[in-house]
Length: 252
Image 1 (cartoon, one colour):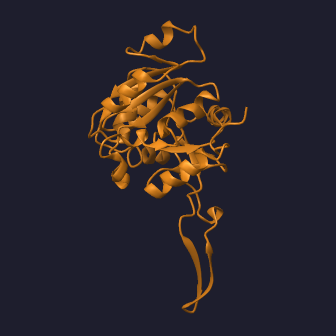
Image 2 (tube, one colour):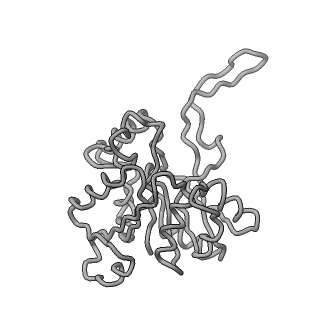
Protein backbone atom coordinates (compact mmCIF):
# COMPACT_ATOMS: atom_id res chain seq x y z
CA UNK A 1 0.00 0.00 0.00
CA UNK A 2 1.22 3.49 -0.85
CA UNK A 3 1.16 6.49 1.46
CA UNK A 4 0.23 9.96 0.16
CA UNK A 5 1.99 12.74 2.06
CA UNK A 6 0.59 16.25 1.64
CA UNK A 7 3.64 18.48 1.33
CA UNK A 8 2.61 21.35 -0.94
CA UNK A 9 1.07 24.00 1.29
CA UNK A 10 2.43 27.44 2.14
CA UNK A 11 2.75 27.03 5.92
CA UNK A 12 1.83 30.67 6.55
CA UNK A 13 1.45 30.23 10.33
CA UNK A 14 5.12 29.38 10.64
CA UNK A 15 6.37 31.79 7.98
CA UNK A 16 9.60 32.44 9.88
CA UNK A 17 10.66 28.96 8.75
CA UNK A 18 8.86 28.62 5.44
CA UNK A 19 10.00 31.67 3.45
CA UNK A 20 12.75 29.57 1.88
CA UNK A 21 11.37 26.04 2.12
CA UNK A 22 8.09 24.14 2.32
CA UNK A 23 6.79 23.39 5.80
CA UNK A 24 7.55 19.63 5.70
CA UNK A 25 11.23 20.54 5.28
CA UNK A 26 11.40 22.41 8.60
CA UNK A 27 14.05 20.70 10.71
CA UNK A 28 13.13 18.75 13.80
CA UNK A 29 16.52 18.11 15.31
CA UNK A 30 18.82 17.45 12.35
CA UNK A 31 16.19 16.08 9.96
CA UNK A 32 13.08 17.52 8.27
CA UNK A 33 9.76 16.69 9.88
CA UNK A 34 8.94 14.89 6.61
CA UNK A 35 11.76 12.40 7.30
CA UNK A 36 10.44 11.68 10.80
CA UNK A 37 6.95 11.12 9.38
CA UNK A 38 8.16 8.77 6.67
CA UNK A 39 10.17 6.87 9.26
CA UNK A 40 7.04 6.17 11.33
CA UNK A 41 5.47 4.48 8.32
CA UNK A 42 8.66 2.61 7.38
CA UNK A 43 8.87 1.26 10.93
CA UNK A 44 5.49 -0.36 10.28
CA UNK A 45 6.34 -1.85 6.92
CA UNK A 46 5.07 0.88 4.58
CA UNK A 47 7.87 2.41 2.54
CA UNK A 48 6.17 3.38 -0.75
CA UNK A 49 5.46 7.11 -0.67
CA UNK A 50 3.71 9.48 -3.07
CA UNK A 51 4.50 13.04 -2.05
CA UNK A 52 2.04 15.73 -3.16
CA UNK A 53 4.31 18.68 -3.91
CA UNK A 54 3.47 22.31 -4.53
CA UNK A 55 5.06 25.32 -2.84
CA UNK A 56 8.84 25.29 -3.43
CA UNK A 57 8.62 21.71 -4.62
CA UNK A 58 12.22 21.77 -5.83
CA UNK A 59 13.50 21.91 -2.25
CA UNK A 60 11.91 18.54 -1.44
CA UNK A 61 12.96 17.04 -4.76
CA UNK A 62 16.59 18.03 -4.20
CA UNK A 63 16.47 16.61 -0.68
CA UNK A 64 15.12 13.31 -1.97
CA UNK A 65 17.85 13.17 -4.62
CA UNK A 66 20.48 13.37 -1.89
CA UNK A 67 18.78 11.15 0.69
CA UNK A 68 20.43 7.78 1.24
CA UNK A 69 18.36 4.60 1.12
CA UNK A 70 15.76 5.99 -1.30
CA UNK A 71 14.71 4.79 -4.72
CA UNK A 72 13.28 7.69 -6.71
CA UNK A 73 10.25 6.70 -8.77
CA UNK A 74 9.49 8.76 -11.87
CA UNK A 75 6.60 6.76 -13.31
CA UNK A 76 3.74 5.02 -11.44
CA UNK A 77 4.60 1.67 -13.02
CA UNK A 78 8.10 1.85 -11.54
CA UNK A 79 6.68 0.99 -8.12
CA UNK A 80 5.91 -2.50 -9.39
CA UNK A 81 9.16 -3.09 -11.27
CA UNK A 82 11.76 -3.33 -8.50
CA UNK A 83 10.82 -5.21 -5.34
CA UNK A 84 14.39 -6.34 -4.63
CA UNK A 85 15.11 -3.86 -1.84
CA UNK A 86 12.09 -3.91 0.51
CA UNK A 87 14.02 -1.98 3.17
CA UNK A 88 14.44 1.03 0.89
CA UNK A 89 12.01 3.89 0.73
CA UNK A 90 10.52 4.24 -2.75
CA UNK A 91 9.32 7.76 -3.37
CA UNK A 92 7.49 9.50 -6.18
CA UNK A 93 6.93 13.24 -6.08
CA UNK A 94 3.94 14.69 -7.94
CA UNK A 95 3.91 18.45 -8.43
CA UNK A 96 0.22 19.09 -7.79
CA UNK A 97 0.52 22.88 -8.14
CA UNK A 98 1.32 25.69 -5.74
CA UNK A 99 -2.30 26.84 -5.43
CA UNK A 100 -3.95 23.42 -5.27
CA UNK A 101 -5.88 22.59 -2.10
CA UNK A 102 -5.71 19.34 -0.14
CA UNK A 103 -8.60 17.74 -2.01
CA UNK A 104 -6.96 18.36 -5.35
CA UNK A 105 -3.58 17.15 -4.13
CA UNK A 106 -5.02 13.87 -2.84
CA UNK A 107 -7.04 13.18 -5.98
CA UNK A 108 -4.15 13.94 -8.33
CA UNK A 109 -2.08 11.36 -6.48
CA UNK A 110 -4.91 8.82 -6.39
CA UNK A 111 -5.62 9.17 -10.09
CA UNK A 112 -1.98 8.38 -10.87
CA UNK A 113 -2.67 4.90 -9.47
CA UNK A 114 -6.23 3.96 -10.52
CA UNK A 115 -8.00 1.35 -8.46
CA UNK A 116 -5.67 1.47 -5.45
CA UNK A 117 -6.48 2.03 -1.78
CA UNK A 118 -4.28 4.65 -0.11
CA UNK A 119 -3.29 6.00 3.24
CA UNK A 120 -3.02 9.79 3.14
CA UNK A 121 -1.89 12.25 5.78
CA UNK A 122 -0.47 15.70 6.35
CA UNK A 123 3.26 16.29 6.00
CA UNK A 124 3.55 18.66 8.94
CA UNK A 125 2.72 16.58 12.01
CA UNK A 126 3.83 13.49 13.88
CA UNK A 127 1.97 10.68 15.63
CA UNK A 128 2.39 7.10 16.79
CA UNK A 129 -0.73 5.85 15.02
CA UNK A 130 -0.75 2.06 14.68
CA UNK A 131 -1.09 1.54 10.95
CA UNK A 132 -1.99 -2.17 11.24
CA UNK A 133 -4.81 -1.32 13.66
CA UNK A 134 -5.98 1.54 11.44
CA UNK A 135 -6.10 -0.70 8.37
CA UNK A 136 -7.84 -3.50 10.26
CA UNK A 137 -10.50 -1.04 11.41
CA UNK A 138 -10.95 0.28 7.87
CA UNK A 139 -11.36 -3.20 6.41
CA UNK A 140 -13.83 -4.16 9.14
CA UNK A 141 -16.43 -1.50 8.29
CA UNK A 142 -16.35 -1.66 4.49
CA UNK A 143 -16.94 2.08 3.94
CA UNK A 144 -15.14 4.29 1.45
CA UNK A 145 -13.06 6.28 3.90
CA UNK A 146 -11.62 6.33 7.39
CA UNK A 147 -10.31 9.40 9.21
CA UNK A 148 -8.19 9.16 12.33
CA UNK A 149 -9.78 11.06 15.21
CA UNK A 150 -7.40 12.56 17.78
CA UNK A 151 -7.54 14.78 20.82
CA UNK A 152 -6.43 18.36 20.14
CA UNK A 153 -3.35 19.53 22.03
CA UNK A 154 -4.15 21.32 25.30
CA UNK A 155 -2.54 24.61 24.32
CA UNK A 156 -4.02 27.02 26.82
CA UNK A 157 -4.57 27.31 30.54
CA UNK A 158 -8.10 26.30 31.54
CA UNK A 159 -10.24 28.70 33.54
CA UNK A 160 -13.01 27.38 35.77
CA UNK A 161 -15.17 30.45 36.46
CA UNK A 162 -18.10 30.80 38.84
CA UNK A 163 -20.00 34.08 39.13
CA UNK A 164 -17.12 35.94 37.52
CA UNK A 165 -14.51 34.53 39.89
CA UNK A 166 -11.77 32.19 38.76
CA UNK A 167 -12.06 29.19 41.07
CA UNK A 168 -9.47 27.05 39.29
CA UNK A 169 -6.67 27.76 36.88
CA UNK A 170 -4.70 24.94 35.29
CA UNK A 171 -3.74 23.08 32.17
CA UNK A 172 -6.65 21.94 30.07
CA UNK A 173 -7.05 18.17 29.89
CA UNK A 174 -6.88 16.81 26.34
CA UNK A 175 -9.67 14.36 27.16
CA UNK A 176 -12.01 17.32 27.67
CA UNK A 177 -11.46 18.57 24.15
CA UNK A 178 -13.49 16.14 22.09
CA UNK A 179 -12.17 14.73 18.81
CA UNK A 180 -10.71 16.42 15.74
CA UNK A 181 -9.40 15.38 12.32
CA UNK A 182 -5.88 14.03 12.77
CA UNK A 183 -5.29 12.95 9.18
CA UNK A 184 -4.13 9.36 8.63
CA UNK A 185 -6.93 8.70 6.18
CA UNK A 186 -7.57 5.36 4.51
CA UNK A 187 -9.19 6.01 1.15
CA UNK A 188 -10.80 3.67 -1.35
CA UNK A 189 -10.46 4.59 -5.05
CA UNK A 190 -13.99 6.02 -5.35
CA UNK A 191 -13.16 8.74 -2.83
CA UNK A 192 -11.57 10.70 -5.69
CA UNK A 193 -15.06 11.20 -7.17
CA UNK A 194 -16.07 13.20 -4.08
CA UNK A 195 -13.55 15.98 -4.76
CA UNK A 196 -14.95 18.62 -7.10
CA UNK A 197 -11.77 20.33 -8.26
CA UNK A 198 -8.17 21.17 -7.44
CA UNK A 199 -9.22 24.28 -5.55
CA UNK A 200 -11.29 22.41 -2.99
CA UNK A 201 -9.97 21.51 0.47
CA UNK A 202 -10.49 17.85 1.31
CA UNK A 203 -11.77 18.85 4.75
CA UNK A 204 -14.70 20.98 3.53
CA UNK A 205 -15.54 19.09 0.35
CA UNK A 206 -15.05 15.34 0.14
CA UNK A 207 -15.13 14.56 3.86
CA UNK A 208 -18.51 16.21 4.57
CA UNK A 209 -19.95 14.63 1.41
CA UNK A 210 -18.76 11.20 2.48
CA UNK A 211 -20.12 11.73 5.99
CA UNK A 212 -23.52 12.80 4.62
CA UNK A 213 -24.00 9.46 2.87
CA UNK A 214 -22.60 7.36 5.71
CA UNK A 215 -19.30 6.50 4.00
CA UNK A 216 -16.86 8.08 6.49
CA UNK A 217 -15.77 6.27 9.65
CA UNK A 218 -13.50 7.43 12.47
CA UNK A 219 -10.62 5.47 13.94
CA UNK A 220 -9.94 6.77 17.45
CA UNK A 221 -6.27 7.31 18.31
CA UNK A 222 -5.56 7.96 21.99
CA UNK A 223 -1.76 8.07 21.65
CA UNK A 224 0.69 10.79 20.68
CA UNK A 225 -0.29 13.27 17.97
CA UNK A 226 1.10 16.74 17.42
CA UNK A 227 0.90 19.10 14.45
CA UNK A 228 3.61 21.66 13.75
CA UNK A 229 1.57 24.82 13.36
CA UNK A 230 3.80 27.32 15.16
CA UNK A 231 7.41 27.91 16.15
CA UNK A 232 6.41 26.81 19.65
CA UNK A 233 5.37 23.46 18.19
CA UNK A 234 8.70 23.17 16.32
CA UNK A 235 10.65 23.82 19.52
CA UNK A 236 8.62 21.22 21.42
CA UNK A 237 8.99 18.60 18.69
CA UNK A 238 12.74 19.28 18.54
CA UNK A 239 13.01 18.79 22.30
CA UNK A 240 11.18 15.47 21.97
CA UNK A 241 13.33 14.40 19.00
CA UNK A 242 16.48 15.04 21.02
CA UNK A 243 15.18 13.22 24.09
CA UNK A 244 16.40 9.86 22.83
CA UNK A 245 12.91 8.32 22.77
CA UNK A 246 10.60 10.46 20.59
CA UNK A 247 6.96 9.61 21.36
CA UNK A 248 6.15 9.20 17.66
CA UNK A 249 8.58 6.28 17.32
CA UNK A 250 6.79 2.99 16.80
CA UNK A 251 7.90 0.23 19.22
CA UNK A 252 9.56 -2.71 17.46
